[in-house]
Image (cartoon, rainbow, N blue to C red; front, side):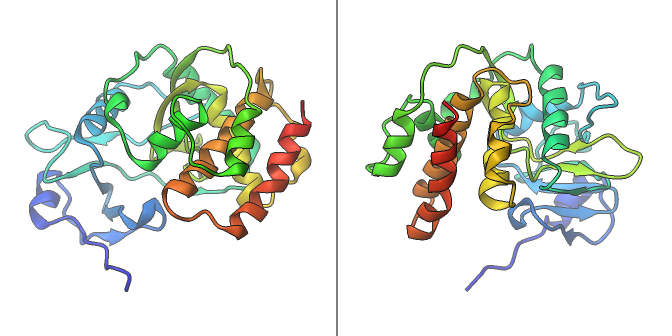
Length: 263
């Protein structure tokens, strides 16, 4: 049976100055709660949460994007009782606004382009981190013919790596009169265009973006190579989470074929 999400405790709410009864927000894997103007979420890795909070608290948004400001606890720390907090911002994601998502992601990546590589990435062993390494040929892929054939198509990528948001499509919110808001930052150390490639691969596989849109490179160099790795990243994640099956193979095969033909 599905488990009931657990809201932040009264002590955690009090520590972050949240006074309203918490309500579960849609998305966020069922982990995100709103209390008035404060959003609370479990800290999935304290080092990562602290690093992101310190960076985002000083990041200067512009007309092309914004981010929710982290909220410190009353003692000045970013994590309390396994939770962290940020300001609530209006808006909703729209997975069909792919071009707008990519533009917001590009603006964000420009803003964080000089940030040094964080050490916590080396300690990450969740499914997404492992899948990222496999897609970039840093680890051996699962023994799956489709996945291995996909990875074998990957050539060299010469673009420099930087910190990026690796899950843009459903995590850019839009509200009238406001810049797009990036939420649920999933840090990866890859070329900036990889974030856009993942967004496009996601949109084609899950949100009806036509296969022909794979040829739109959005001005990003080595687009085919990035798309191949983006699809390999998502397929590997499905493998590692136990969700890969015949239905997923049928879903991803025409996308892989279309990307390969771009060459």
